[in-house]
Length: 253
Image (cartoon, rainbow, N blue to C red; front, side, top):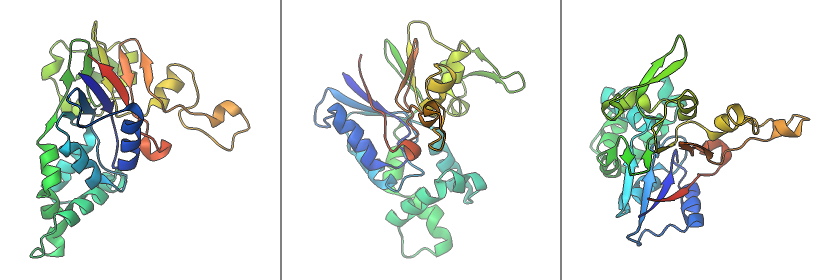
């Protein structure tokens, strides 16, 4: 099987399609399988197109990200909090409500009830898994579950990580956890969630975390959003809203 892995598309359907086309993804090929590492919506203007596309694929593995949980929580409590506006959840919910519109509902109920009943959204959410594992790879959103001491800023591995707190794990900066020794022997963890420029800058000393176009130093005007690759890790979040691209890696395993 050939796995085409993307992450953190965030509602940018055209960038997703461009990345898959460049890698030769063929939805009709039974040997081609899409792996999405979560955060398929929020921020971009094409969340419905993203949902319908991945839902239509015969071979796919859809992993839950933190934005899927943010949406789920907002629709359950029927209230938007500050972070929902900041993270793009409100805009996505509005799109979901529009495409699931019920004329008998009042405008107050429309967003929450119609969005929660949206067919594309529910089909997608019901397909989500926490992780996917092969002989050589583990595919996750943030990282595998582990213990994190916020005061000491240290990580420690837990033996039964497969049954750990996956909701908390979706918020982990995988590159930081990896650099603190949270690794699995003889496996490569493929992750998203955190912009790869962080790892290139802080761990590989290659480019800035964020480019500064006004700087007179050429190095300060450069940031790398291509995959961050090292022994035991492949991180692929391109920060699409900023870089205007989706990273796609192809793995045969």
